[in-house]
Length: 434
Image (cartoon, rainbow, N blue to C red; front, top):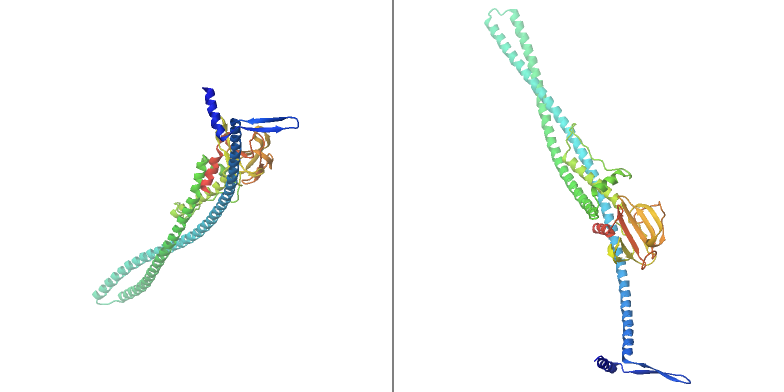
């Protein structure tokens, strides 16, 4: 049965691959090699496999070349967009700071004018009350004097002899009455003048009140713009640090404790009129904006000290991610690019290792704040030394193939408290923001 099946297969193959003989002739002898159908089939299959492999390899190389160009262009566009966004945020922050300063100056001027007006109104009110009290006293005295004069006249009319003493008393009462009448007229004129001054002050107060309302509306508009700008600037940074699994309050407190920049944290405003201790609504809003600006400044410092940047700025390919690989844990992310591609620090820090380390090959370790450490392995060249302080974006080495590696690439690790975490969590959190 098996022999019969073999004969059928040979007969089928002979239709396409008939048996051939290759003769080898020498001076004294002639030999030949018989090429059976099965042998020809195997040769044809091997040739087809080689040709197919060559076609596939060529296609992969072409696609890789095209993809590298696209990655390079995309990286360039992303970098330009990131720089434009930073410039826009910086310009917007400066504009909002200038507007806040101008609003603060206008607010101070308005408070000064209101304080002066309040003092003038209080002085006018005091003078008016004093004059009213004086007028009431004079009127009482005048009424009493007029009654005395009437009584004196009645006594004069009752006396028929009209003695000299009575005439003298009447003259004295008339002189006192004339004096009181003149004083009353003077007081009435002063009262009328005080009333007129008070009315003028009230009119000025109404005008100032209208101006203050207009100024308050402008200040409210400026405050709203500043609050919206702070919300747009601060919330994405909150989201970035939260997406990276970092406690924002702890991070900001740590940055604030180690703050060494010029100027220090922004101080809250403190306004007071007539010694009052209550804080006005505008002062509270201004203080809230200053707190957000301080928070934004601290976030900016923290972003420099946390590894949110990409270690490779040129075109590259992700060849292996964080997680299980070939039955063991792969504790980093691999970036593939040409040999010698520059490698950059992803955050400010201090170099704690720069040299050969087992399977890592040439390795750079950088210790950052917040208990974070980054590792850059398989380098071809080291450009930093142990103890050296590096900044975010500073070149620390060149991509290579040293150590336990199957090709030119960068093995990038990120450890928090000594435990390896996925570096792409930080990189993607920054990409979502910027």
